[in-house]
Length: 102
Image 1 (tube, one colour):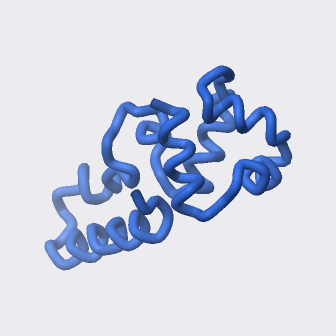
Image 2 (cartoon, rainbow, N blue to C red):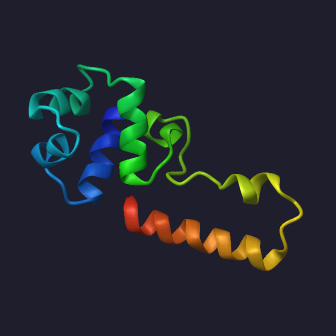
């Protein structure tokens, strides 16, 4: 699942493999192997990619269908008033539309 998600997020940003490899100071060949599934990225690179694309590591690895996940404040803090929850959910939607258009 990682190769497909990486390609999807890269294309959503309008980047070529060479451009993405350059962002991470890595070779085109290495990123090509990540997208073809013939090489596995390190945990640190997965985290860096998730941050760069504005998605969760779970999404990149195929453990979640939701690119943005859910903010912990929304998920675990029942004391937040409804307007705050609505504002957070709106911001999550904005980030999803900005960083990982599917």
